[in-house]
Length: 198
Image 1 (tube, one colour):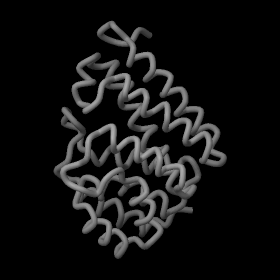
Image 2 (cartoon, helix red, strand yellow):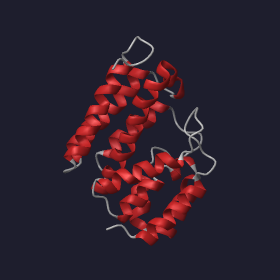
Image 3 (cartoon, one colour):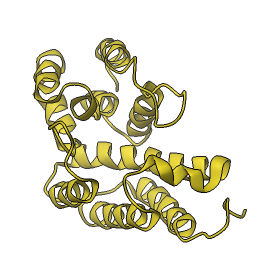
Image 4 (tube, one colour):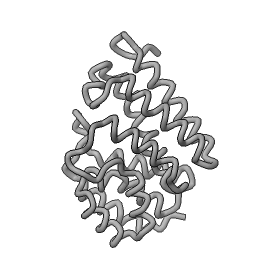
């Protein structure tokens, strides 16, 4: 059961924190990614702390680093703050190189709690869905948004899938959905045409 009062407070806090942020090269407010991740957490049996962490999983990385993490801990408690920290691939600005960050994220992920793994797979599921959806809309222009080649993007998602399959207990449907999305990313990463064939 989700605590509606705590969740409402987190929604408002998240919206304010990310109010000026948009998805790369779009006019879509970044908040909608965060709420989608939180929805996935709830739909897959997540509790209130996990759902709130879903909303805030990018707050430290994108909106203030360690200072924001301390604020989250004060407002929403140690468990939420820990999940958010676990889902953060860097706290420093400027961010380290893409490949270095992603390798470290995968390495660290295998040691994380079930709560952190749940929020992480929900985040990556929505990201993967967005990659496929945007590729269908704009084709290869999509890849200009990333600091890595398409084959490296696929490498990242393939290794995330391995990590979730090995370490995340239960959640068979969620893992299968993620596997399906990773298969599609593999196809479009190697696609020589402009848009994916249906």
